[in-house]
Image 1: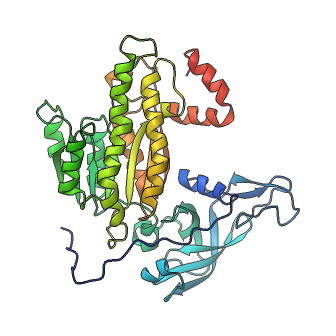
Image 2: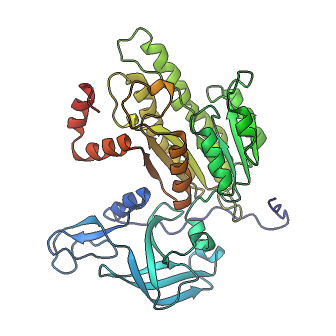
Image 3: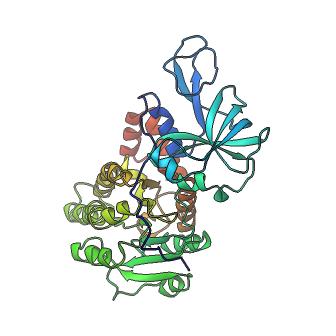
Length: 407
């Protein structure tokens, strides 16, 4: 049972850590968003550097990002009781440390309170509440959930109230089970057309703390009504609404199928953003269990799709584009928007796709892990990871391969 908020206490307004960064430093942001530990590395002498330099401090050659070993040793630690920045002052005391990284450079880091001078540490490149890349260090094998600073930079489901927008999605039941196992305080699962049979109804209702609620993302009224009822309670929203409909541009039902997919994936996201975005953003600083994250589950075919999924891919591409705008809006309250790009899932609509396909359980596990690590971008499934890697290397080759049916 969550403690009720004391109405006599001051309501904290959302504040963000300092966000000024150079253009080059945003290379680190991209790595942190994906959960990679990568540092600036000289392309000539191979030396690692920190922070992000414009050129190698040793030989003045160009630097590029490179995956690095993440071990370090603590040189000194400081407990800031009255930090100068307002964001950190409201969350004081705040621990910082000077570490010697195993790959070479020294760095000032956010520090786990249990770390002692001389300890071997695990380093993590992660995003702070302003969405900027920072370094965090903690004892090797230590429990990061005991570090309030780590919690401020992640979106741990523990103790939070969560909305899953479509209980009919293949990942809805395993996701609800995983969230309950991670300590979620309450789970709302949206059911479009509540009168229709829901095969997993009994299994969903058996999940501790789960309540089925009416929600149809294609209806303005349905979304607005639910936001009126629970919008002020939701701290993590996981949008699983989808409408897989295969078919190329010349198929007889192509236009109708594409329109239906757009209504669910793209315009559904807009309806949710309009109704749930403002109350969640306003609660970004609402105590230790304020609103923290929005998750959009999208197909990897939002990045590139075969001709046979033209309308479906376009709907998800539109959804992905809208995520960029929504991320900026939510960031004003310190909320993280996580995009989850999944390969074809193990349901009837993707039965013609070759394995391996993504199970609901694997997708659920990736979502919960991404929240616990504070990620912005998660890819699920071998096909999704391979496709994204190939897109980075040669997008035209991927386009031709998809056109010829070779995914």
